[in-house]
Image 1 (cartoon, one colour):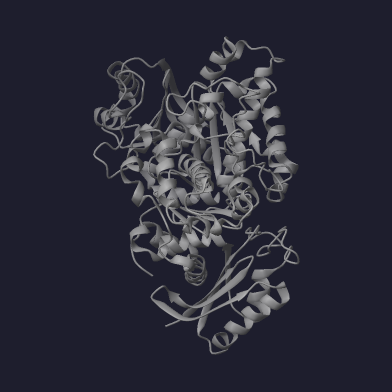
Image 2: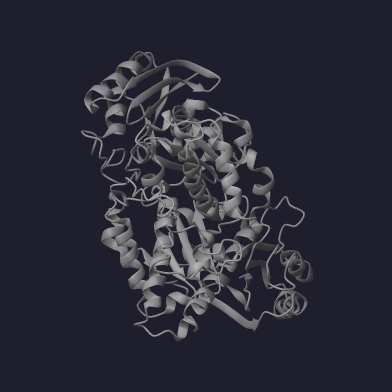
Length: 313
Length: 313
């Protein structure tokens, strides 16, 4: 049986996985993100023995962005204009593929996580659109529609949603360098840190920070519900791991929808609608494995299989 | 050559069309929306001679909503909980199909308009995602992703986006019965009418209403850009017909994106990005014709042809 390589390229750490899905994990390595040269060398070193033995059919990369995902572009496979020092205009996909001599599939970390959650969680296979939102250092959203990640001009960037900001209630101006008080500017981990003078994970459960945070997340989710009418929303990342936040978000989503007629199902079944990742911290890297399988087996055939839940891979 | 029937079912008027695309228009009728019984009778009367002669292969309906689009549901094809008197729980799709003895495809007016704009406008065929937003009595958004309309829990309802509302600048509380100051509550035709005490179309060009309106529309478009990363946005309906509004919206979209790195293309090519409908007032009914063609020829085959711009229909 052929194996696949998955790479989750994050701003703080990389996760590399050899396997063929959540039931077939062969080898895994996590290491901190340093310079592109050093980090890519570690990726190559990890996979090289498997590649040499011919064990790997393809690689998938789930990367922090922004990315160039346009296969017709001369910079396809690049991390483009990231503020992360040294990582702008890095040919992540091409460099890794060339050095390991393998075909590579490439997408955003959040699109891959959304795909991983849809493909590898049997009860999610028929749930389409499926969205994955992560809230941590940044806020990112991945979207699967008709079984495939949504790409267009770029990729989903709903972390930068313009949302209502009541400055009487929350005078904090926001931290986004582009939009100041967009969603990421108001609700990311660094925003919480700056507003309250301490890291999010050190804020006690009764702190008003959490009510405000739940409200901003709920505003974003309501906008995503209106945009995509998703059948499932997976809410991951560090911030939502705070005890009680998921429940608070769900309650506020219902309040904001305000019994809106179109969302009767959401009103009744909110606890099955907005959920933590089934794959835990492996949504992204297992999504990368799914990307790799598609790269090797043909995108469309598997896309259809995934979309219709017709068969497992 | 087989013909198709297209029906745009609007809250104020119905448009019925016999044809096979914008180059093949055979017969058209427009009449005001009255009771469901009377209106459906007029639809049936218009198409009956064509159906009797066997000229029609299928019908497509592009309807005001909310709609039940779930083919597995006992109320598939119904208008569901509309506030429009008499039209709640009306089996529009089933009733018309049974009385004319034809297969019927069914979608929202805005999804059909988006599909029509993508399918029948050659330069739009490869532009996916493509979004269609209409601003008039209500605000609606249709979305085509991977060549197909987006359906999920329901359908896109981005007219109800939560957007920033600066009450110092605009103390008007909004008119949405569900959310008060959501997008539709702040920027629909009736909202403009109530805020300024006169109908939108009577407001002079220099009135501050138009600057505010452009800002709300731009906030919604920016959120749609972040959600879908569309390759084209078509902006239709009565309100955007106001001279200069399209230009003002484009300028404000660029301001709100604020040079955001991911949107370099939008910064340079905004005038090719947000456009009025190519099909004028026929986007919806010609989208209904496209739905009908798919219903008859098989959804997937045509979806792929449309999505990849591989061939004309």
